[in-house]
Length: 456
Image (tube, rainbow, N blue to C red; front, side):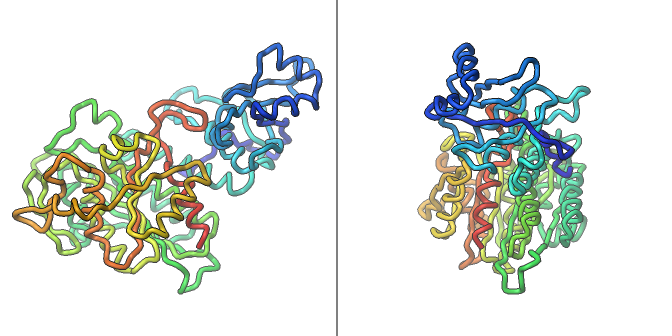
């Protein structure tokens, strides 16, 4: 999966002008084309979000107007790839938006996961010379991420996810290490325990890269992603309705792979490490049980209070190892808790961070890119809820409250003191289709994180 970008013209062809317009600027724009004003009135074009006014010379289209309403351009332009004539090619005209946001929105809206269908959808396209390089990079990374999340679990298991990481490293000249078998048990014992119930063996991949201008003293940024390719819940089995979207439980790993691709294509002046845990949480005579006690890489013992709280077990060994290199920033992403969705809904990933300056940079980047996060507290007062009578800690709280916070507090136990760390609890999915955000897997926080990392 290389992230082929839907909606981007294959050849260097000229595109027809595509004008984004808001209601407040509609009259000014129509004054430039008096004949268009009559057409707009006839078709009741008011520049409402998603409205398209096609202007033509006879049967030949000459330009188009896209209503943006008050939406951010990256969302507003997402409405037009399937609203413009099939086979047509367009170029973004200047407006009260950046060319990058407009082009990125168009390309995000052109995405559909339909490669398993006999007749894939055909969107209109953008001329290549209308797409700023950064927009193409971000669209490609979002496509890679969405494709991974959307791929059914029978086609994307732990080995296939690890393959995707290895292929990504090879495409960009990064070093990559694949860990499986006995070495995985030694290095990542809790990740191994999560995958013990599946016939598809768990693996981990570590990718290392540095920018062409990054010396030995360049900031080290370490990323970790939860890659649970399917989550049954284990012996604490999920109901069937809760399993329907569990192919997306590797969304954290997919987002981090997309982010790594972005960093490498942008050639940021940093040193990068990426770790993903590729695993399936299933049931068999070999699966971990409630009340089992596991030994972690960090030496802490963990009682299993619930086998469906497996994501934190996948991440804790990865975080402990990543922290050993003392990175400037350590960031993990995971579809970790339903509690985060109860608190914030599907569109707002929960951010937990032990460094206020780091948190503000991430939040600011989210606001800039219409890719928001919302900070929740690492409240120490709840730490005792993870106490266990037989181990150093339990993988779930003994209280019915604050599940997202206690999950973050669990992970914090594996991050060495003094390291700036952010944990992002994502949904990684669009329940319904909206402009620029088709139903299915979503690369939440990718734009925000990439923008924040550009500041180093």
